[in-house]
Length: 299
Image (cartoon, rainbow, N blue to C red; front, side):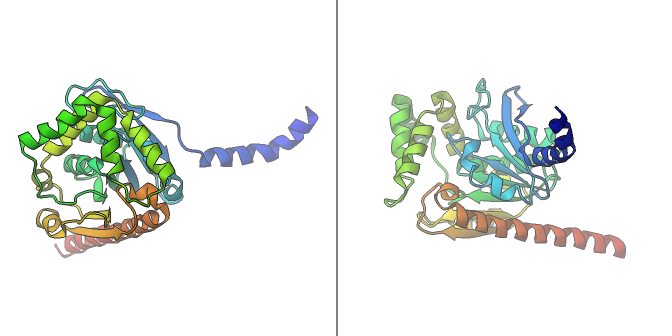
């Protein structure tokens, strides 16, 4: 006991320091339709980075980004409704409904100077979320998404695709996921993602796919006045001209020798490109604020 008391003055500050470095516990937030949304928060600093996963994924797909970026930023990862640890009692699996999950988290945590980062379907979600939070969001980063903002699917095309997933969700998901990798992809990573996404909740997966294929990004972007960056694989072309027709600004950084899951397939390169993008957005935001201050002084 005496040894413990002697060591306590040394051990207690160390414990407090270590506890300050640990990630905050899971946060549970109610979305607008009362679905419970799970999110995790780690780190401090602005801009705040909010990561939004893609179709049939979850916040664990950002596991190679969280510790890296939490050294300089507050990092928030979210499970959209029907995914991961979030609730699934939702009636409409639309992009607008998913965007409200993001809005609920950002508002509950009272975040500002936010950069929304969305992979695949998450790219559509963050466009709609930014539209609803013009004073909180300073930029969007799409991750292997926004390949062609002008592409629209007919109702018949959507139904044809959904029919395969309704017939056999796991098998169809597995085939789709495998097609998103290059032939030389890490087989362990491929099998993990195939298994994980194929085991997603079918009702959420099918509903989310329908919502994603039906989403018109062009309409939402009419009300989004922040810069958009993309970090995309060069496996498929990105229609930069289409992006620039509808976004305030639209810049693309390409990654080679990776498939759709760029943040997991080559985390080092992805993290470097995202760091550059965050810094560029920070400079643009500072410049915009400075211009407003100068104008106010003149007036």
